[in-house]
Amino acid sequence: MAFENLIDQKDRLLLSALQENARLSFAELGERAGLSPSACHKRVKALEEGGVIHHYAALVSEDRAGLRTSVFVQATLNEQTEDALSRFEAAVARRPEITECYLMAGSSDYLMRVLCRDAGDFERVHRDVLTRLPGVARVMSNFAIRKVFRRSAVPLG
Image (cartoon, rainbow, N blue to C red; front, side, top):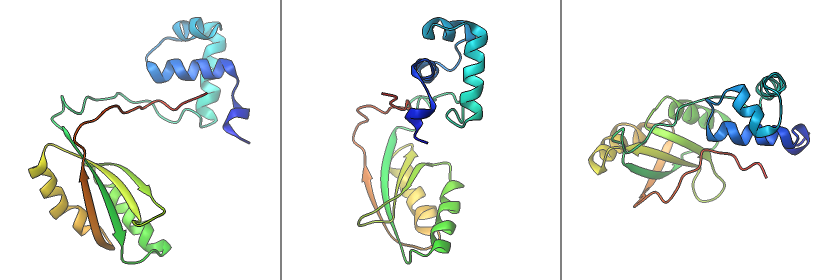
């Protein structure tokens, strides 16, 4: 069943409010969605149990954490067997400086976002991490000049 069929407009209001501020009380959430706090609690619990809400987190300022450089790295593997893909993905998941990773269709196998302090720090990551990932034949890196925006919220329509 499609996501749109699982939730109604009240759920969308709750999800939008939680994406904006996950620390809102059930009273505050209910006020935004036109629900009582207990009805709001039941709906949020159902959204969690149904896997629509799968995690809560604090968003940390990359700049304030000293991680001002984003590098988008394309990786091409020697082979695309299930075992090779699994080994690569497991290794990437263990590296905290790789903040996102996508299996791609096209000229490279994976696209990753690497977050680091500066070009020198990326050189270390390139040398000590990226080129040592299992099955890597080639990496190609693109430095972001400036972040225009980055959304953490899912568009709910």
